[in-house]
Length: 616
Image 1: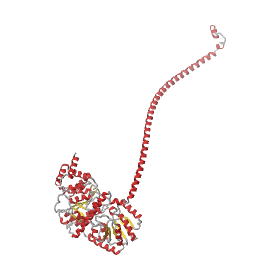
Image 2: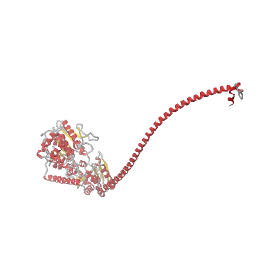
Image 3: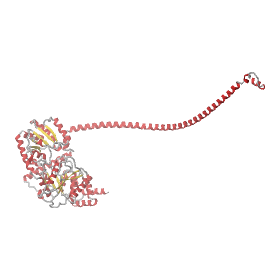
Image 4: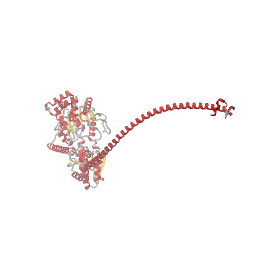
């Protein structure tokens, strides 16, 4: 009953309550059912439709409470799912180390830093400073009402650590909206800052509500950090406290020597996945090798195993084994940069492009697809960009540079100068301004742009935002994504595989049918066997009864036999006794016959009265 009432109330809140009463209605739900139950119910109902509920919840007063004015933040929490094997993971780790190392004029630490990850720790994590505290919460992959476990863990974390700023690095995940509500509704009211790791328009390429829901997250955030001025301008449409702060570098540019520029050597460094478009390298190198037969491309990186296998297959099919080397992943990527004459990127999107800066540190010219929101490409320093997915223009740009060694060095020198300027920016100081700015120093977020600069950046923003939106709509309409296009580029091959799968399925079904028939036959035989067994058991029971009766008769017979044997024994004894008596009589008779009188007895009437009787 309670669940049904709450569900009805949530629907009213999301669809019927006028905007001026939303906050009051939300608090009434909390008073009646409790905050956890309300959030759990909303998460369960709107987990995959954050944009729908976010339109309403943005008007709830408890999520719009201002921060304490001009408070000096001391405890910083930053969250990412893990700190293993990835660019974002490495950046998060480096930022923690930078913040924990910052000191004031007296040498005292400015910040207590807490890194929060999902259930951990894990193996092969990036190295953290010893004074960075670790905390763990349930995985971001929780769904719906399960989120309450994660919410409880975050609240417990905030209770124990007196947190001033909570930095989330998960800007495209469903849980981020709910994480923000959790942080902003905590009694200590920490600042919630969203660190956007990729181009702002990227969410429009995701098949979900991320792009729509992000605008509401932007509105409620206390601060937003972007990786380009273009992104900063876009997010400031929703929240004036947005600032572009570049990522820290993993290298010291002053310690890196310019490449040896091995003639016609090209390097590609990235994670192997769909957004990096590594398969584009095949047609590009086919065109390049027509003009420069000894051109050599080294692919450094690993990732999607299926995509890697497809890449190697295409290299072999196109007879490019001598021109393309797959080096895999290595920590010593510098040795590949230091031998190359050119760096190439086939990415459709980059958030910051750290490998671009690495290439510039080695003085390498860069050829890439157009990504004008990137600072490194916007600067134009040593970078040649071509239309997205135009492999012909990319190949021609590579050929033009490799054929002119002076051009290689000139472009490389321009890139090296640019990276030296960028690396001089104090990342820690920039974040300190952000932390202070979210608590009231709005001037930190102001940026002076000339009319031409503003016009150029707005053109980039509108062009690319529109392009990503249209592409996303096309992808969703046709139920496909870029990753699927790359993994299954040959549609005929898919059809053949499906036909084979159907044939195999039919064969399996036929075998199953045969198996069922055989099973039915076996079952019938088993039933017959059971019947025969029952009949046999009955006969055995009858036999046992007959045997018992026979045993009784045998017992009686044995008794009668014993009685007969006893009688026979008696008769034998009687016979023996009679035999002995007969012998005695015979002995007596013999004695009589032997007497004298017997000899005269023949023909003599011994007794006169008995003579006649004797004769007879």
